[in-house]
Image (cartoon, rainbow, N blue to C red; front, top):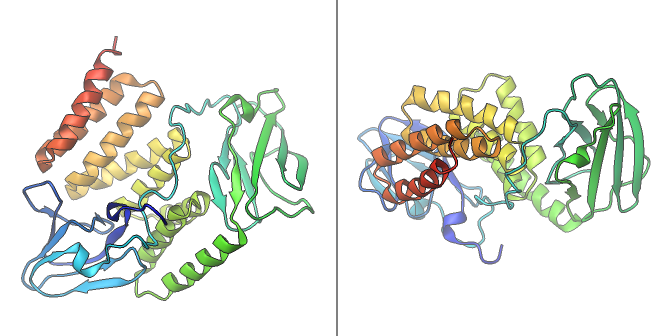
Length: 340
């Protein structure tokens, strides 16, 4: 992927035994690592006596560390522009979408690529609505149906075209339409991209990961290719099974936020924050608190947003990350002027 910087490559911890710590670039102290901790090439891992760590690298390889000492992440995971797992798999949509609960806004597929044309279409259930008119439009497709539930499987005879973009429009029997929100769409991957992704999935499936870590890695792979709906479905399965891994809920929240589904994102972030606090996982607390602040600004919960951003700043200060402290101060100053 041209122009990809090394810091965009995504590596994460999937196994820990004993004392394993991380030192981020620009920070003075080491912090504890956790299952799902994301690693930059510039980070350093420190293992105590008898400790071990397992890292899943951006090129879909695994790196096992089983000796005492300090290890630059770049020594075990390649710093390359050919990274398969990347942090910014797609551009974040306009986060100002408030997700008005009185309209049938689109939930899935929404601002995402898809790997196959087997579609489960879902939208927000509008209170009092007894039926919905569903319209799917795009190259070669002009499909219409009416249903009583807020979801339907696409059953049209027409086949979606690879590389083409489609739009789902839902209108409740009360007359309110998903088009009242910023229009959203989705794209079927080109045949070339689909072939590449399927080969990467096959490669990933062969790696010696735990079941949950394999699903997390696959979700990151999907996200790296803008297959956000598929990533959400995978992670939702882990949530249903009662996962207690902070990274699962944090990634799910991030995906919802990226797609402009801010109310759903907030719900996942709150669970992630609860888990991070139980672990005394300060870094994840900071990241999640900052994300909650962004979402509450979007939802016009300004006082709540201010408190979340303050909490994030306090967490980053404890981590010794002065750059984040200053950036959050600017946001807090701006937000303070908007408070009553």
